[in-house]
Image 1 (tube, one colour):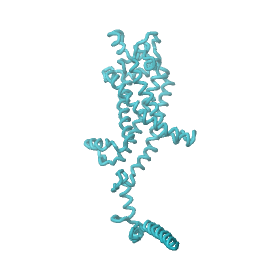
Image 2 (cartoon, rainbow, N blue to C red):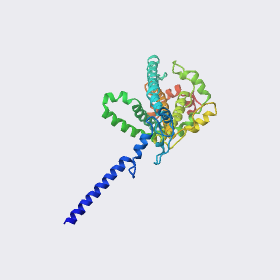
Image 3 (cartoon, one colour):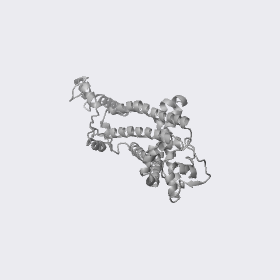
Image 4 (cartoon, rainbow, N blue to C red):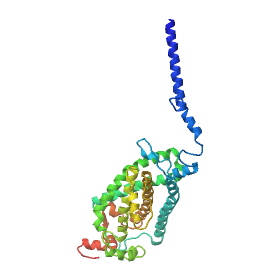
Length: 358
């Protein structure tokens, strides 16, 4: 009986001793209870770091993105502070947002002024009632696949850039958070539909969008948009449409590539070799870029190209809908009135008619 009590008492004392030792070791940071952590803290002045100068110098180095060693798999954690993030945020919330907004507004205002001054561009000879096939079903599928996916991408992207200031005060934080989350999900996946559309329209239409001498005359006459009775020569695509086509292919390609870089951050490093190439022409751009800096540049380029593309497509949408009579039929029914075709694309009609009336 007594022996059992002594055993239980010794057990309790042993457990308490282990608990006290573990606590002391944790507080001192040393198995020998030598209080090394406290001793190091007392030895090192509060404004210095071992092996370096004062705190101001330390933070200057850290803010420049100096990379230390880490034992964890994510080596990017070796960069404690990366000041380019501050610069990126300042540019994004400042010049990018401001000039992007003004650019889109300028296109809308100019379209409105043009409509008030010029009015809707009508078929001067009147609709003939006879139609010509302009785009076959595959052409229209390619157009609408590219167009609808771009519109969704544009709206969800603009929400990320401007929604906090425009939508959130109206619909509230909860609704805005849900809208932005699902919009970002849609943005990520619908991007691949946009890429597929780009490939399709390039394959289908590139041969019709090569420059010709007729394009120079079309440009010299302002496309006939500023005066009635002017019908400059044009094949299936006029010079203005060719500009939109190549801007869409090049700009869309840049958006697709930068978007993939953002979907898979730190996996691609395109800017360092590109900057090295530009430096051959007298530029002085940095060529030693971290994965984070590459991703930040991809985000910056994505936003700039996207805003330019949106402004351009706004003008294209205006001319293809309310700005020009009969233009929308080309991508809805696939057929356009023959008089419309003769006035806007006379060389194309001549090709279809075998060299007939221009």
